[in-house]
Length: 162
Image (cartoon, rainbow, N blue to C red; front, side, top):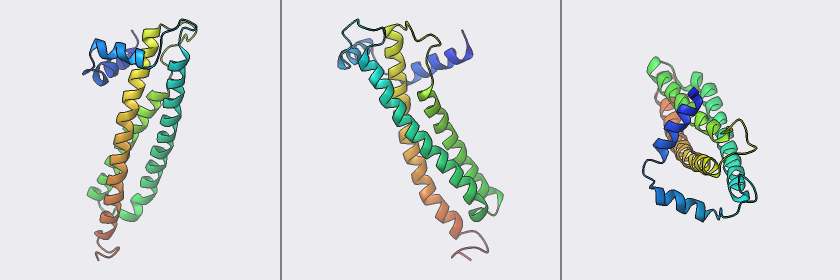
């Protein structure tokens, strides 16, 4: 088993640890996956498209925040502790970016005949992972919104705090 598949399985177990088998079966019914026209039913395919577009938007936001933090670091951070705050914020955004990239990645090399269960599991994983990334991005953006003015105001020799 490849490293990527091992990580995927671990991620799936982590984000679905509280899901019971009957909940997973209800997930299929909720998506109305009850026909055998294709190996990946249209409803699941549409679910992938929705999550892909949302993850793309979140990845754009995350990338812009990383760039903004990198550009603002010399302006607001004068010592190592203040630079450390910005570096930690950038690292957290990079984790969100990795989650978004995972939401966008292909789950199998051969998409011609994937099992419905594999598609269902992948959709659940992407949905849960996207929700986690979205909430983390909201919290991180709020943290940046609060921390940048504080760093700027209390840097010796700069801003209103001098």
